Length: 208
Image (cartoon, rainbow, N blue to C red; front, side, top):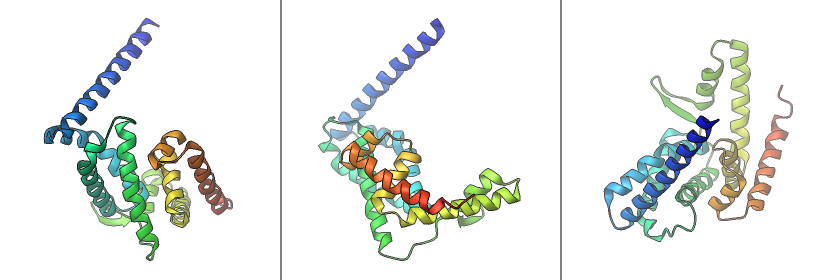
């Protein structure tokens, strides 16, 4: 029991120290310290890339969004006033860039979701299915079909519905945080998630 309490205390101390370090990096970056800004980027770059890739399904598009998002962060960091977490502020910028990208994509035919591998560009659903079911041909086929169906439904959602659905189910964020990221309320995020989930269930209802 003492060990558990000690570990919890150390974890809380580490978290507080990390938050203090981040705040110091932000203030230094706001004063023009390039190294401090690069530390912030390194702290969040994988999360930003993962979010963009999950939303857009394309490694190339995700890299473009990543660059555009951090360029906006660099240009607007002086406006950050610590009235929310830096994570929320950053993801608000990233999701706005992703929303712009998704709206542009809606205006043109849907492109196949691909992922770059050692064997070249491959369909994203195929890569995911092989990862989970490579040893079972029947399961692999069902997994491919399910992944393809999910991708199709995601593509049919509005950009905002897709964003909320993936922030909740892929990123594991709470609805309150999603609302803050989108600059809306928790209730608005909940309603948007409900609409997206209903469409997903309707489309997958016959899948066994």
